[in-house]
Amino acid sequence: MNFKRVLLMISMTLSLCGAALAETVGEPAAATDAKPALSVRSFTFKFKQADKAAAAIKPLLSAEGSMSIQPSSNALVVTDHAENMKAVAKMIGDFDKEPQSFRLYVRIVGASRVEGASKIPDDLKDVARKLSMLPYNTYESVGEATVQGKEGDPGLIDMTTGYRAGFHFGEYDPASDSIAVKDLQISKLTGAQKDQLTSLLKTSLNLTIGQTYILGASKAPQSQRALMIVLVARR
Amino acid sequence: MITCRNFREKLQPGTSEPELLDHLRHCDACLDFAMSVDPDLFFRSIGGEEIVPPGGVDAFVGDVMSQVRVRQAETSLAPHRTVSVWQRLAIAATVAAAVTGATLAYRFEHRPVTHPASAMSIAARTPATHFAPTATKSFVETYSSHNATIVEMPNDGSDTKVVMIFDDKLPADL
Image (cartoon, chains in turn red, blue):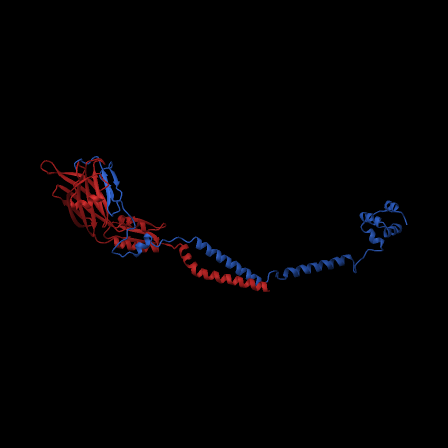
């Protein structure tokens, strides 16, 4: 009988310990192990395109999440867990706003490699330092300007040196906190009368807000001349 | 008294000759031999006779078999208390505790790893007016010439990103 009592006490003690552990550990474990049901929600956009929003919210979706675009209604149908749906709804709410205004700073710098001592103006020493890995020792300012505009607005900068920068403000991407600069075309007035506009390059860029970018263009790595375009987008 | 040789020559299974039985009562050596020939021979040598139970053999066998059936019925009806109630409770509690402990240990070992600073949690904590980047986009999305080489230069530690485009269609006097 004593053996039975001892065995019973041991069993009861183990049961109590198990219950205590289940209260402390079992609850979060059950919360994480359990797979909540997926919910479906449709988002209709007023200002932005649904396909652009799809790219923005894609990183927020879980492995089970999915979405489909309905171009006819400019809507996005998202399927995911309720917890993720909150983040998606918040992102879409912030994304689908009236076109935001941004300022784009553009500076064009001519870089060349010449014999003799380097020539770097004081106002370009900061740029030249960032380009120290390139084989250029002379820099000259071609022009600079800041253009303000909303998403979708065109921008045009005419510089007194004959260079022109034309572009469109693209859409802001909250996921990467970046603004697209569409169809940035750098042109140059050429000819004896400087009356012929020659396109040098055309590109589309994504600029993270507040970050400085330098886009260099050259015929070849060993070329003596390059054009450096400094770009900074701000709100 | 006959000799052992005569005894063994005359011995037949089921014999009841007095001289053979008399020899058997006095000769241990022939007793072993007789037992191998007829096991009941010794019993008859000491005067034993067939015992008939009262009422006959069939009645006796019937009574015995009825008692056997009664005992079997009692055994099947009686609860099999090979393990007491206390022992059962103790065993059940032990098994429950073991299962609970094993389940908890398994869940603890296989719990998903959570990253407190994951992109999702950052996005959830970010105010509506400012976004924490959860993705990065390439700086140069498109370029007019497909033959150009686009190279991102090594970062010198600053926040500035430098990208070079080498395009043989560009004029030399940019």
